[in-house]
Image (cartoon, rainbow, N blue to C red; front, side, top):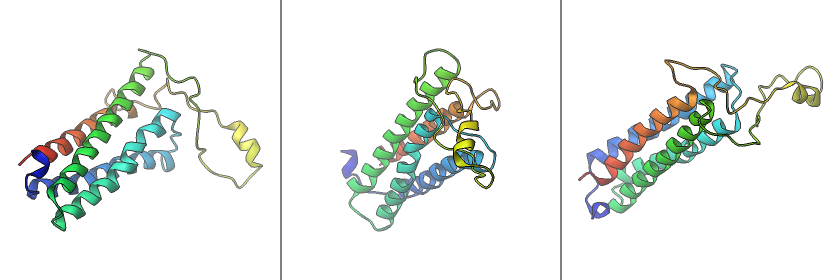
Amino acid sequence: MFLTAPTGKTQTISAAILAIGMAATVGTALGFQHLGGYIPCKLCLEQRTPYYIGAPLMALGLLAAWLKAPPIVTRGLLAVGGLLMLYGMGLGIYHSGVEWAWWEGPADCGVAVSPGNYGSGSLLDQLNAVVPPSCSEAAGRFLGLSFAGWNVLASALWAAIALRAAVKR
């Protein structure tokens, strides 16, 4: 069975690539939010969860490979990371479909964070002034894809790397 095959260089390198890649992907999203001023909608925030779990999980996979843990540990962590990214890809596809009006989005889609600047006025006034972003409108499109669309591609890449490394001898 693939989980009992020895952990090799492929798993170690893949875990390192995945830990860095997943952290960079979610870091880019956070950068667009905090530096670029893009306020994420509810679905945008949900798409980050697999990365918040996956990046540390892949760091654990890298540690397990370095410490020569039983193969089932490293390969299992890689498999779980791949499944998380498939889930993230599904969330991205759903959100992209909402943006393209292929199907309805959640009725409660609204802002979960505000851009900051609490110095002037009351917090309540600022919260009332924030217009929640709609899940059905892309904040921007780059090369024809929204952030959700780019997340689909990133998640697919990370899932392919993780699942391939989990089963490769």
